[in-house]
Length: 68
Image (cartoon, rainbow, N blue to C red; front, side, top):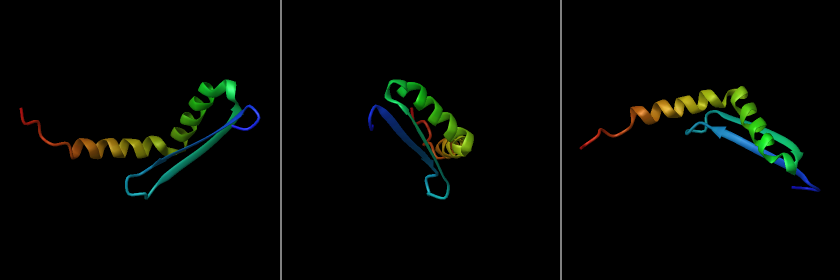
């Protein structure tokens, strides 16, 4: 934070590092929540949704069987 300005940087990466999506937003610190939302939406628009879906599908495939 510099002079009341907040600089948020976010990234989503594939587990193997083959794909990385990065985004950055800057604005007044008083607007931290909307800035975070904007950052998340930008990451998703840039392809983070596809990376996250792939990770989720891999977790389901590799989940151990229920041993109850």
